[in-house]
Length: 379
Image 1 (tube, rainbow, N blue to C red):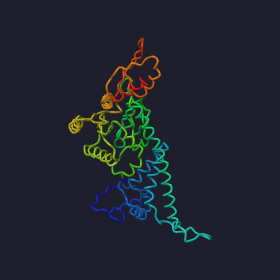
Image 2: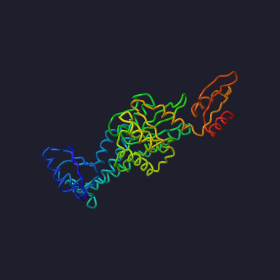
Image 3: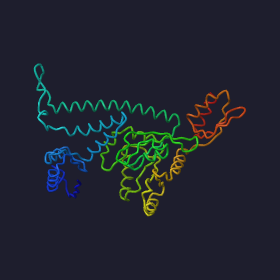
Image 4: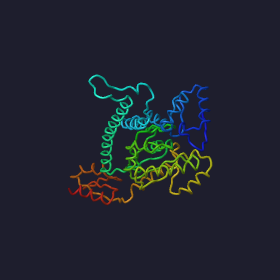
C-alpha cells in the first residue's frame, strides 16, 4: 500500500500531521499491516510514537537502506562496515521501552545500586563499536598497503562512482570478461569493492574499481562508514561518474551535483572526472541525448548492457592514464634478462623484439619511469 502526503509542516510527535497519522492508523488496522516504512528520516522519538500509535513496526528510509546493506554484504570488511553503521544508528534509539530495561543489576557484595539494563545495553553497544572500529582500522591498513603496492608497481587505477543502479557493475563487466561481476536490477547490488584488470590497449592494462552506489537523501555519515570504498576513489588516477541517462533531466542534474558535493565533503580530490551517461538504449528519441550532449559536452554516452561505445571508454581511459608518458626503446643485454620481468611488472610494454645482441622493449613510461629503468639496467 502506498500513501502520498504533502505537508507544509512536520509534526514533532509523529512527523505526520494528525489527519494523515489517523488515516495511516485506519489502514494498518483494516489491512493488518505489520511493517510501515516512511520515505523520510525520523527522529527516535517520532519512530517510537508512531509504533505506539500504529501498533506495528515502523522504520524510516535510513533503517530500510541499512537492512538492504545487511542483505547485500558478502565480504568480511563489508559485513563489519554494515554492522558499524547499524550499531551507530541503533545507539540513538535505545529507550526504556520495556520492564527489563528498568531493572538494576546489583546484589550481595556489590556496591551501589548497579546499572540499569538500558545503561548495560549502551555500554555493550559502545564496546562493540570500539571493537568494530579497531578491526576496520586493521583492514584499512592492509588495504592501504595493497594500494601502495599497486602504485609502486606503476599500476593505474580507475574508479567507477555513481548512484545505485546506474550500471557501474554492468560497465565493469562490459570492459572485462562478461558476467564475472554480480549484476542485478536492484538497489545496492554492489556493496563490496571489486577491482579488476582491464586491457585498454594491447599489452596495456589498468585496474578498474567498482564502488558502492549513492542514493538520494541518505545521511552522508552512513556512506562514510564505507570508508575503504571511498579511499579507493581517492587513490585513483581517473574517476568515471556513471549516470543513468534514462531518468528525467531534473534527477540527472541532482545526481551529478550530489555525487560531486559528497566527494568534496569526504575530501576526495577530483583531478580527473569524466561523466559517463549509461542506458542510452532505453532512450526512444534523440532529443534527450542532444540535450545532454549540449549541457555536458565533455561526457560520453554508452550502453553497458548492449556494449555500445565501450571501445570509446577504453580510448578515454588510455588517453588519461597515458598523459605525460613517452615511448622509448629499451635495450636489455642478455646477461641482464632477469630484469625483463621487473620491467614488465612495473611499466607498459608495447612490444618485445629479440635481436642478436639484446632484447629490445618498447616501453611507455613517464620521464621518472624511464630514469628508473636506466638505473635498473646500470645497477
